[in-house]
Amino acid sequence: MYDREARFPMEETMNPARIEYTEKSVMHMESRRCEILAISRSGAILGIVTRFKIPSQFYLDVPKTRIPKIGCVLMRTKVNNTIEVRFLRLMTANEMQRIYVYSTHPAHRDWVVDVRTW
Image 1: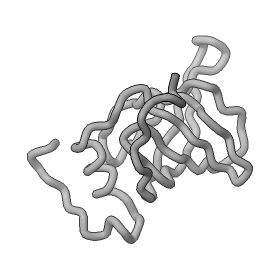
Image 2: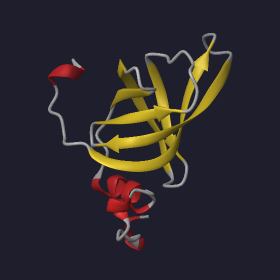
Image 3: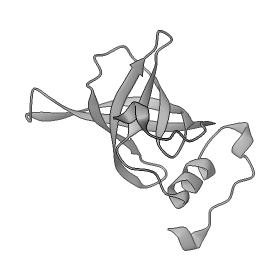
């Protein structure tokens, strides 16, 4: 299903994020740090800090941008400690703007916060 959807172009970014998922069914929530390396409205490429077993479905939380948990599906795990994920919903233009504002990538240096979008 996800491989037949329209894909939006990825844009490089560098945002700290967190992968959150339940372990052992519903017993407790597990959280791991990661870095958003590239993002589009429909998916992202994440760099993981440590090697661990990644579930097929999880939440992506970007705390600096105040974007609530985004449902994700794991598409591919690559050898260089990166994973490709698809979002369960499309990100809005306001959410993408917030990602770019808080990015540490040099391409997003001139982005500023629009107070009306918060």
